[in-house]
Length: 356
Ligand code: NAD
Image 1 (spheres, rainbow, N blue to C red):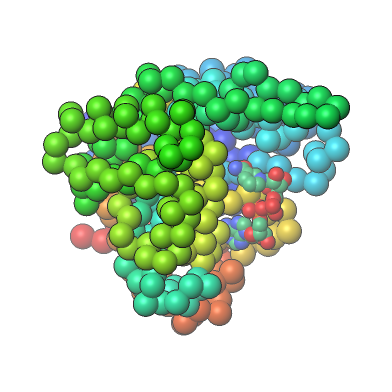
Image 2: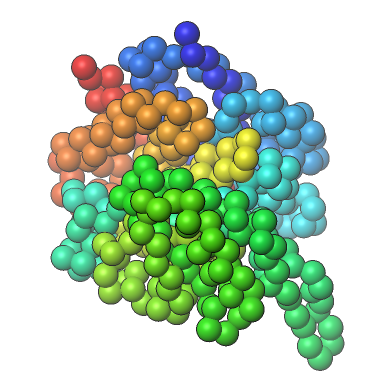
């Protein structure tokens, strides 16, 4: 039997509630598809600080490295906001990404027909949107040297090596080959040298993927096209800062933060988490939407463990449950037949995903 070890980091706030639902669904599909998952829990963020006075204990890093994949909820909360930067929950997460070498951040955006009115954009513009942003995560201007904050001036440096561009480009082409076969590479090659190298290198890599259609787009145009006609995109490939901005813009096409999953992957490791935070305002009330985390678990099956059919089951089940009119409270205003709790939503998706 195929067996996988999952490192589970529930985190703070609603983290534990939503991760429990994802595990419920994973267990249901693994039984159906004939593989076995074992879970080991680790602490990170505020929960880890409370025990170890460290937001990322060494045993969490080791456990995450040893596992076949990491499933993560969310971290953070007011309680830890006044701690020095190196003790804050967010520092734990940034350090873990670096330690795992997860250089590619994948953010799919799917507009569900049933929730089309949840977006601020017109239904006719967003109906059928299904795109994925592939953002370089551990290079570019956020990490480039030199950097400085002086009295009268400050600067940062946008650096990319050819190797860094190649590996993220390959990731995007490989993913596109399993989707609709189109990559839009976003840069600012008309102004920045670093973008010129980006464009040339992406062109080079594209020769290894003749079946994929490649287009280049300037980032300012891409920001506009995402709102004007988002259906034109399949895979958007871009660097760290452009990807940061464009993926937040793209996430609003779907209208609800509680729905959107993400993956951060490298050569070996993968970290799967919802895009939202720990939502301390609703923690412990049983009203958090677990769909983003359940959807992240589906990405883990697809991208990390190669269990495509189990991932399909989960994604189909989410669509069906939404189609039936079940909504958690955050989506209660959008054609709801019944408002359900976090726990009930997880059970419904597990049940639909187990259907023959
Ligand atoms: P947030 O994403 O936690 O919440 C924003 C709003 O969306 C809140 O009103 C919240 O109730 C709602 N919301 C979020 N997820 C939801 C869900 N699954 N179901 C229903 N409603 C949901 O962002 P915030 O309030 O700015 O931050 C809260 C804490 O989370 C902070 O400490 C922040 O640093 C942290 N944070 C962590 C991550 C992460 O762990 N990756 C990401 C972003 C923010």
